[in-house]
Length: 196
Image: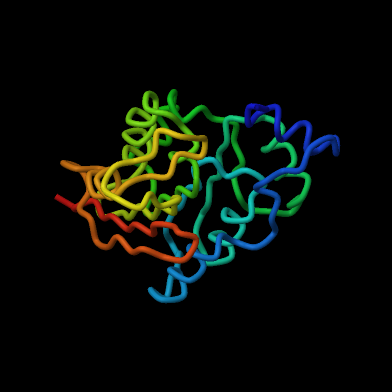
């Protein structure tokens, strides 16, 4: 299996297809944004594992001051190449070694298919890192492949995630607003961090 950093480089070279090669935002994210009337004016957002930038560009068009980060330098290079006039701050960052300036810094955190790409460990640590990005009063939105029951799959990647994992995501820090079973089969989860 080609690891993601190399996968993007080989995709840019044309030797493999890139499974995250898309120009439109994730459909579940876009549908959620329309449903809630998402307006990022005066607020900040981050896309975890932003890949080639489609979701980050979508949030920037929605008015957010947006950061997109990925562990793969080749992904960030390609995102910048595809969006040369973008206001998005594209950065090479390891989710498991977050820089201090990102922790607790965002009104909206979007995570699409990153956690389900990881076995456990390190999935639990990665989930805690995602949660740490949310500032008080902020929201986390996740889209993941859905396992049929409570338990997450041990076969992967991708590892379809069970209800137990999604319901416990951010426990003690975030409150679960909604956890929807959507087409795919996928999960759409929304969480909020209290202001106090």
